[in-house]
Amino acid sequence: MPPAVRLPKPTLTEQQPPPADLSEVASRLRERYLPTLPAPRRSPEPVDALIGTILSQQNTSLIARRQFAALKTSYPQWEAALADGPDGIEGVLRGAGGGLARVKADYIYNVLYRLEETRGTLSLQDTHDLNDAEARALLESLPGVGMKTASCVLLFDMARPAMPVDTHIGRIAARLEWVPARWNAVKVEHWFDEVLPRDWPSRYGFHVSAIRHGRETCRAQRPLCGECVLRDLCPSAGVFLAGSPTAYPVALSKENMPAG
Image (cartoon, rainbow, N blue to C red; front, top):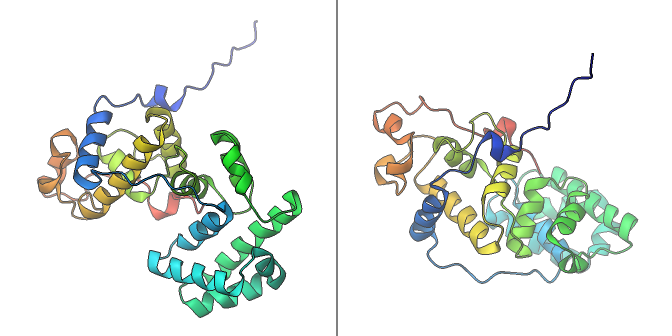
């Protein structure tokens, strides 16, 4: 009896083909929430950008900026933070206010320690000379840096065509029935990576405008479907407008969102 032939696993776009209305949705969201793109930003020191991104997780932007400023005041060079250790970093973060000080201090210290141990420098400036895949691989090799954190640094601080997915984007994709509601954020991000144009303006524009849409209109509870620019394209609009806000699943709950 011949051995069984193992068929290749279908790609995500073979499981969920690109939606025909993707470009129309992207265009409407951009027109509504981000008609003018900002100039791409390249951080002079991506380590600063990475630490800032770590601080922003489960924090308000105001607190994250305050904590980062406190760190830079206490540690003009990151070598000083490495020497001070996680206890010292935690003390600085607590002094600046905000929660999860110990967790974030450990993340920051471990990133700095790994950089020193593996690269002999607390700099990531050379990532600007790497291609997109190489830059991502380097970021994701650092402790506590998952796909979403790396994508945020790549998109916002290195002008690379990444596509971070948060609860808002996942919820919108599920309500549009682009992806199954059971998919987690990592799987949805991989899918978007396959279907979106691989250029910075397209991905930055979609990411930012979709998040604003999720916050302002396509909210987790009581979405404002009557005001939605995607109302005629969204299969879920009729469900919510009929007065049954719990009849359609909300994708990417906190339980299946990755920390990194």
